[in-house]
Length: 135
Image 1: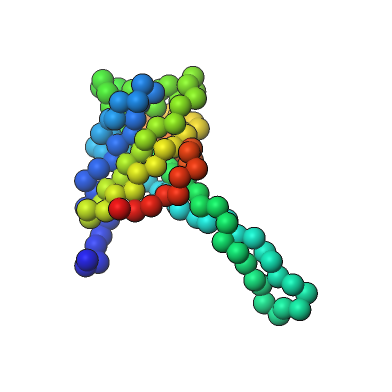
Image 2: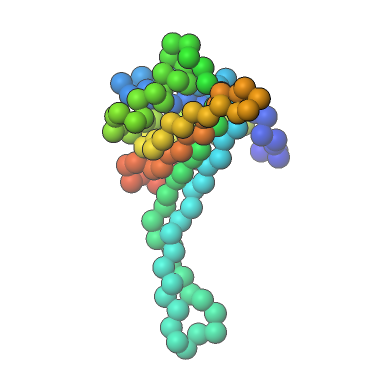
């Protein structure tokens, strides 16, 4: 596969609290996600450099969205974050490659800027212990 820009997103979907997949790609203005691995320092006192073991995998995401109060769009997906405790399937596809995880979204912080924008930066973390894997 050739190198690509960040312009080829075809899927950004998140389940609502009832488990219905909602395509919110048009409401997401930018996003950040990470798939880090924990490490354990196993350096003996006989070493001059650090030795490590790879441990558990993780996933975190922040979706930056424009408030959209239309039915089944971003607000409907995230408005129940403060009142429900459900994992939500989150699927990202770019350049034909998909990353799908069960995510616990932890906040729905709407903010209104002094110029009038109404946005939210919605953070989420891995929910189910499955290793994040690109298809």
